[in-house]
Image 1 (cartoon, rainbow, N blue to C red):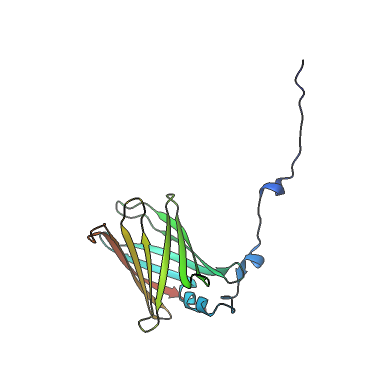
Image 2: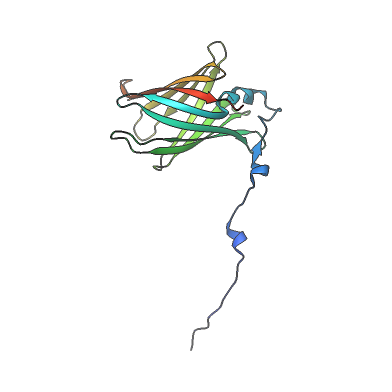
Length: 178
């Protein structure tokens, strides 16, 4: 018996999901969730100076997506002395059922971080926490919004015993559009 060749044509659009920027980008946070207003602090274009040896620079861009229910932040660092270029995307929201701020960070190297955040309005500080399941280490990120154009932040990773195994800090400056 001779095999029969069957050709099936499937339109390329069946394999893609295209969202135009007009449909994707929102003007601001969804007004039905007042807690999202806090995430406005991350909105806009930012330049970051990351301290350490050596110091390096990063750019960030935050915009509202999915009807203003999420803030998407894209960032990339410059390569430096012994430090490769890095980039990632962070998605933030407020979960009304959990009554908590949530964020997911996706790094170009393939790692993912899931954080839960708490906003302190008195100090204008967001504290994000993540426990690494495979190692038991904890990662705490603190971002203090000094004013509308300045964000001072730190990331501390501790082992199971609470000893700091990695720290990084920086200062973000918002680029105001004229």
